[in-house]
Length: 197
Image 1: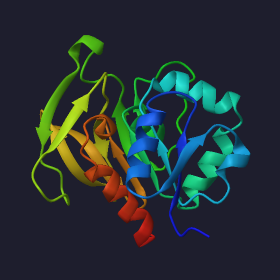
Image 2 (image 1 turned 90 degrees about the vertical axis):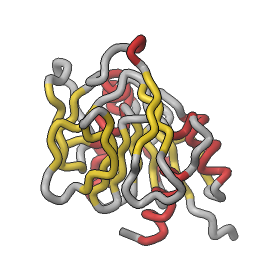
Image 3 (image 1 turned 45 degrees about the vertical axis):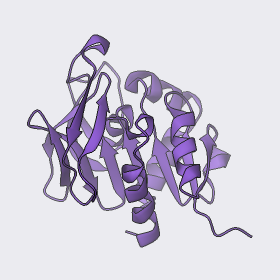
Image 4 (image 1 turned 90 degrees about the horizontal axis):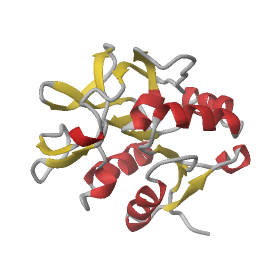
């Protein structure tokens, strides 16, 4: 029996394969999650980038909304990138009509805050807790954190805006580390799972 971590990647939309690849390279048993019965026995979960309003609708259509909220509330370690950050936020500034989140992070996020697809960019960021220099961050229609609660640790900023946060077992970035070849953010998430915090 393997002692590898079992990490699901929410597979309703977005960069699923890329996250599975990185996590597998790090020694985890990683696979896409699309049904409630696939949520059992997870050590952690990744909510990938994509389009947050579509992801919200699909999570509800696949009957994943309530089970995911319950797992997050029970302390399951979860990492959200880009749209995943929005899905983990307790609050959205100017949400689309009817848009819901899974919640858990005491933050207010702003969707598409850095602009449209044509405004996508890359930047080297100082990232609290990661060694070996700056993290190359890819921003694609990215959100930012407008407001973070007292229990939220700010890990990185871009253009003065909060783009990476942690609150207990929840980690979120508004950028896409899964596409750069730099595995340090995923390594941090694996360490969060192993530490049981």
